[in-house]
Amino acid sequence: MKKNIMLTLLAVYVILICVGCESGNLFVSDERYSNEEVDANMDIDIFEESGEKEFASGDVFFSGEEMATDNENLISGDEANVINEETNTEEYVYNESGKIIIVMFHKFAQVENDEWTRSYDNFYNDLKYLYEHNYRVISLNDYLDNNIKVPVGCTPIIFTFDDGTKGQFNLIKNEQGELVANPMSAVGIMEKFYAEHPDFGLNGTFFINTTSFFPGEGTDEEKLNYLIERGFEIGNHTSTHINFSKASIETIKKEVGSVANLVKKLTNGYEITSLALPYGVSSKEYKSYIASGEYEGEKYENKALLLVGAEPAPSPTSEKLNLLSLPRVRARGGEKEVAYDLYYWLEIMEKNPNLKYERKS
Image: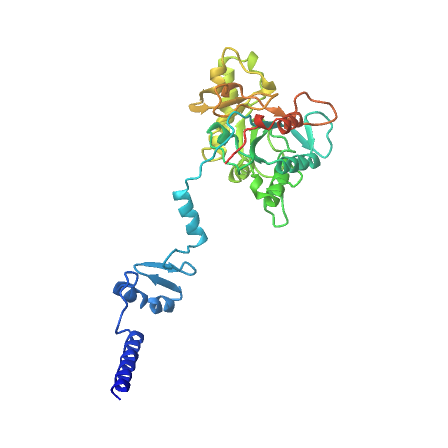
């Protein structure tokens, strides 16, 4: 009888403990559950009433799907990007003994009438070939600043365009009356390819003269700003496509400075940082005035002077790098064979991958 009474009392005691736990009068000791956290969690209804559906955890509040758990915080995409930028410790390791191709284009048209003209179809095929062989386009300024970032296993390549021809770029009006790049131009084709393959990149430097560039709709100001706003770069090709070997100091300063001043005026201060030498010819005596100087009270500075050809450029960290004689590779055009052209070097690099400046990790 006593035994039955004791068992009954024990059962009642256990029930009371369980009821106390459920009522909140008894708490299990655990540092994860403090009175402060309980008080904070009581504010959930307040935030839900505001329509923002925020959830509280301690003193930190997360909106939408950014709920905090005991072990991890789930954050939104935008905040993740900020955190990744602030805490990114990724190292870009390259084969820095390799070379980088700087491609030189001139004219574009439906048909390749001469060695300087690339057809629109073949240019699109060039982009496909480069993409499929793990080339990714970067800007010339990124090369000059040694700020090269391409995916692992990829090789940077740089596009340059001389003379500001219509086939390179011209503006037309769409059905809404807006100025857009003509699809039948190098820029229009690059924009199309970029929409299909955004990881390829959208870059290129256009070396212009002051006499005329990119004939078509729009003002010079609209043309230049269209390119700059989309990440393209503007370079100097002298005012009248002069041969520097026969020019005086004053002529050099005028030819270089007038382009720099015009672009700066039309683009709210854009600074040109490179010059493509007309005919690939520099000045033996006055090269320093091509690189930097002053014209009509405005200073100009070209970090790099680009040649016509005919080999890939050294790594930006190479001891052999001479930015005042930076080599380029001619793009193929027409039926005439061009020595050491783009596909010559692409084939060489495929057979000798160690020649390529390539990201390893």
